Length: 139
Image 1 (cartoon, helix red, strand yellow):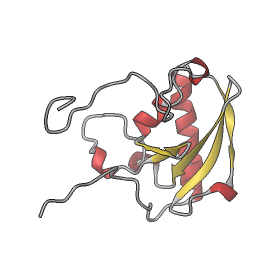
Image 2 (tube, one colour):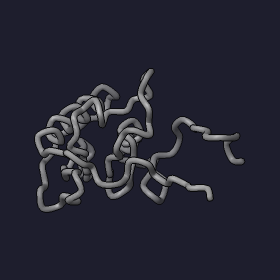
Image 3 (cartoon, rainbow, N blue to C red):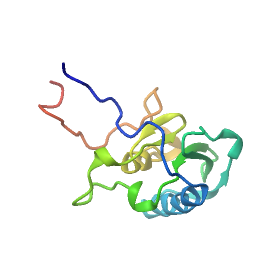
Image 4 (tube, rainbow, N blue to C red):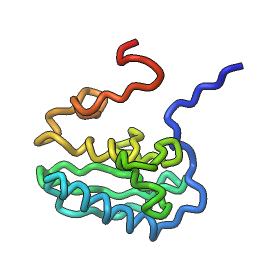
């Protein structure tokens, strides 16, 4: 029997701490800033925590839009996947951005486009890299 894995890293995050999530959020905001995305900080929202090892924050975008991020509470090197040599995407938990799950690198993409006008109706950003697994794109 074959098994299929959908959205690896979207399950509960074991051994998570709120302090790790706070530190991770600081790094996430720095990565957004490095991409040239204007952010006016973030606010911790404990009442919105998923309760699965992810901790809720509202990211205040300079364009007036607030975006909820559920940040995993593992150490940064176990959460921040950036397509770097030696990183195995299957070993990283997903962040949730407005209730859609993304690996860190792609979660950053959700803040692209002025006024978020580049978003598809499902909230994802148009464009980006095509990643092919076991075959050609569109196959």
